[in-house]
Image 1: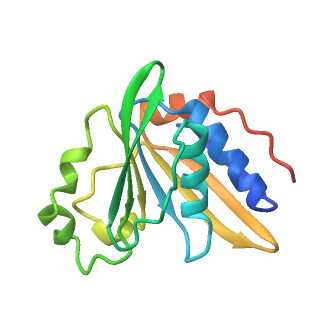
Image 2: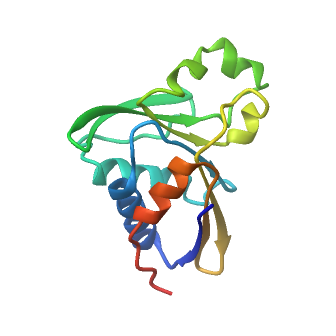
Length: 161
């Protein structure tokens, strides 16, 4: 499986990685974002969505738990579901909310705080780990499926170390 690690100097580098990911996306991918508060999970997702063609505001779904967006991938209208599970009290709340139905189809699902739904959340194609390091962020992208590996193979990102 594919693995990619880099250092992001600043928010502009995070936005560049988000744009590169947008160009590499494919319908049906599930991406789990790991990192402490302020690590850049929402900033990365916002950059990805804007680079994928979303014109409006991208807000953190901290209180709504999920925000849907519509983008065009490979000429096809695709829904992207941006989840923030930080406020889940237990994994069963994920199931009770009916969120599982968004996975396993043509939608792209991006999940912040996936550990809050551990055991019930569908497996990711890609895991992104963001860690605050010095003035920037260390980021690791790891593919866990063939689709995830194909996405990371398409990823063209020039790190500014």
